[in-house]
Image (cartoon, rainbow, N blue to C red):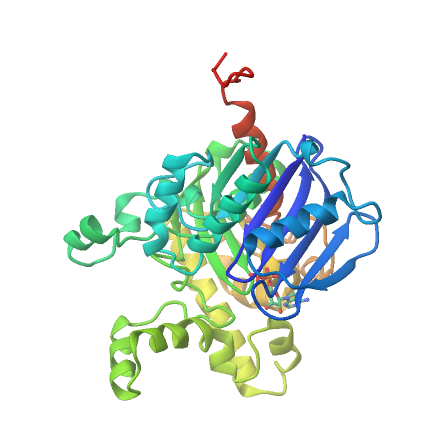
Length: 409
Ligand code: ADP
């Protein structure tokens, strides 16, 4: 089976062509600067050289047309005919309370995704554009939606409700939804496999640390809490996002700095976090290069790891213990300093790192706890595209088959 995985942003389309049966990507790439001058397509067929093409790409439909043409091209292609694409899997950021699993996209699903625009005004509209374009360009090919929020729909009400008037939940859906669900699900499932004990016996804390970061408490296979909330702004310190703070600060800053709601949103999402604290960069590699020489870089790093440690401690408390801690995402997979500092002092919950193993650089799944550690610690590269492709295959294969006249058989 061949699945085209699409992750559509406001001015970009990321794609992968995956055969989920053998868990292999045939090609991946990205179209950037859609609707701007100098749009670029970067395409990498597996095992071959990367190609970069520029052109005028006015909208998402044109971008996906461009992707299809390179997938079919003689020199850089990986398929011979559009008909080889059996299904399209779409990453959809917000599924609200409507979706606790991936779904085959139909008109009803589209209108639910539209309803969730209120919760994710920057993400769901481009996701919808991607779905519309793919439906037009690949008619009769099943399209599946895989939601960032779905995995966290198992959270109990006391974990997802805020201390606000209950009517705001009822009227406006104000609650914790959580994000990065596809990644938390993937790495916790891999952790279960690596560990060997049954899923329904394991308490796992997953730390997805990238430009956006979140932690999740996964008890017996279900997400029972996660650090991102109503939006991906809450929780850990992130590249440019503030994470947790006293909500009164926002009102105070808006008043003192004379900011509009839009300006305040931009400040919290784009100019805060590691970038805001360090004044150097949002990129953890650059922060670590300056860790010894710059107080502000060290401060940003320390806030990042201190807050992560607090989340790990609170999730261990929420689950009545922890068996495995997982690190993933660009920072989680690569930064031994983040792992070391975040786990320092957690011996009292049974977590003890093997510093040598922690320092090994590798792209492989690995365990890095010491021999005597009661809690295991795994570094697991995430693969959200593979989850989307696998879900797409599962959903498509469980649909009742239709005959040529369109009737179910
Ligand atoms: P996104 O959330 O955009 O998918 P990634 O998961 O790719 O982001 O993570 C990007 C982050 O990972 C950046 O802050 C980058 O500096 C960090 N990172 C990548 N490699 C390393 C490394 N070797 N050491 C420390 N941080 C790293």
